[in-house]
Length: 283
Image 1 (tube, rainbow, N blue to C red):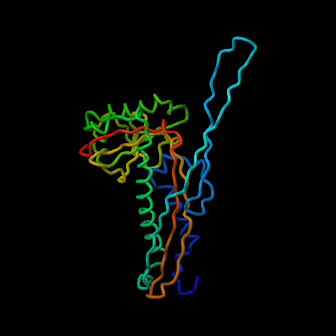
Image 2: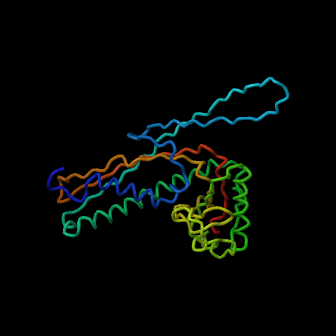
Image 3: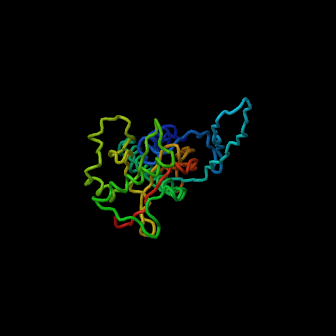
């Protein structure tokens, strides 16, 4: 890096700070696991996931014991999402504090990454089994303040009936601001201010039907319907890496160029640990 480049854009500093911001603030990253995350160098890298087979229990009726053969399931988590950001910093901007400008652009880069990443992870609602779905494509649910609790109880019940909820596991549900407006009018909703339990997820607004409630503006309508996603952190595994951040001088203007490459991928490893509610976009 030459002396003429923008000194505040040191790649190591950018990478460390941006990773910290993403880890803390991204909504869906509160709801996945990173158990299989390894070194991700290039788009297309694969993380091998081994899921143990179910073990059956039998009644002992004689001295003979029969051993069953267990075949673990192998899944591939492919890092197939490749996103980048690239922009110019005009020399005129350098009159201001380098640190302030760097922080402002870090925040904007973070928001842009979060938006595409959250949308991608919320799109995994297509992996939810039919038995864990509340409402249908043909008859989506219309929510209001008097029915919202009943429907969220049904969503939570779907997770429990599929044995996704057990000791030490805290379910979550993702809603958007429109649904939040109804939820805040429900007397059964327990706001974060009234929850003494310190285990609420980062950014959770409270709890309903035993699920931590998080709000994402990236839960958008699809064909006039919303797909409210719920689950446990065992359902989806995620891997990512801020692969590279570079700063270089623009030869055609009095500017510095900054660009970053972000790689990620996700896999639904336990579909039964997911549930969804299909509601009308007017709700």
